[in-house]
Structure formats: C-alpha cells, structure tokens
Image 1 (cartoon, helix red, strand yellow):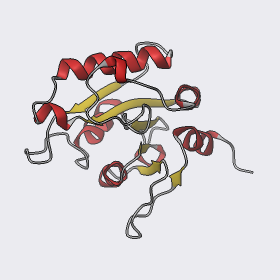
Image 2: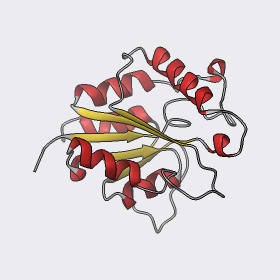
Image 3: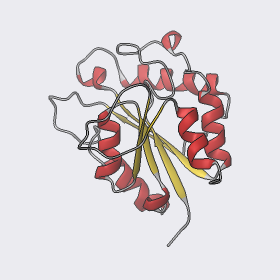
Image 4: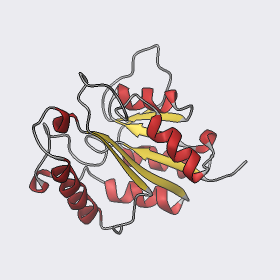
Length: 175
C-alpha cells in the first residue's frame, strides 16, 4: 500500500468565483486564500488534480479552448507554477448528454488512481456542490464540501467554510 495522497479540486466556487458559465479569462477571480490553501496542500505532499464540469461546452455556449484559457488564467493568478496540477479533467458534457467524465461519475478519479497509485483512504474530492461530494464518495475516497451550503442529511461528509479551512483541517496535526 502506498502512502501517496491526492486531492481532487473542483474549480468554480472552490478555487475561483462561480460566475455563470465562465468563458473569458477576464472573468476569472480567485476566491480568498485559494493560493494559500493550495500551497498548503502541496506542501503537505498531496498530488493535486483539477476536476471540473463545464457543461457550457456541451450546450454550445463556449469551447474547450475557452476553458483552457480560463484555467491558464487561474494558474497565473495562483502563482504556484504551470505544473501545479498532476492532471486536469474538464468534463464537457451537459447533464442531458451521456456522461463520460461528468461528476458525479468517478471515472477520472478511478483512472488517476490507476495511473498514480495514490492511497484512496488518504485522498479527497473537494468542491462547493453536493455533486462534488457524491463524486468522491462514488470513487471511494474522502469527500468534503466548501462554502456556505449544507449537505442533505443522507450524505455524510464534512463541510468547511472555505478551501483554506479544509486545507488547514487536513494538514494540521491533531491536538
């Protein structure tokens, strides 16, 4: 068993502000302390993955190239280097289309586990929506939600106020 650990991060509402169908790099705005949170996770030895549903592609509202440009702008704003993420998964399907990678499908996490051999019991999926938590649970890894939303009582996972709060909680030694 490996002790390699991973964090799968949702993009919109977790790292950057969740605008409606962000397709222009000028719309990309980091959430407070996003850089510090991600740096803390990296310093703690987590492999970092970006996992984002971008249904605007499937709906014909923008292109995959637009998403790449927005991701590039996010990386520039984070200032943690262009190779920050071990892998990036952009799920272009709309909810009406057959799911290949669209969350809550755990396929990207499963494929990443096979490629990188991380320990699922030490790994996390983090996002601001129930679907993000469901994805982690479907992949049999830990899951957490960030932001001010609540999880349904049927879904058991921690909720943190922000990505920074999550990063601090899982990287700080217990008291």
